[in-house]
Length: 123
Image (cartoon, rainbow, N blue to C red; front, side, top):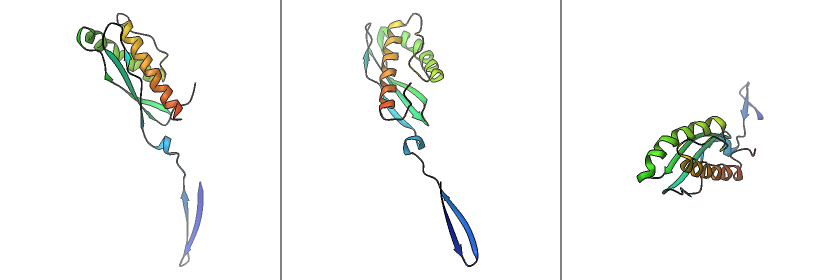
């Protein structure tokens, strides 16, 4: 913190200025790789990081067709677990192991991308 003292017409005031690291001042978005699900379709995870924490996770690309019910079932659970643990080291969803593995792999790439840009600490 820097302080400056200003005097004008007998009045004295102290002005404080703070320096803020831009990486911590705003949310930043990092994409994971597009990962193929062996049973069909692709998965991509995108994370939002603010103050060195994952604050949101989206899955803009997810399996469709026959794999859609598994994705629709698994992704909310995976997202919730990842936000709670702040990592990709989470359990897969039973009955949706291929979707879970592809999702966690894409999340790992997104986290690595954020760590490379110093938005997340390395663990």
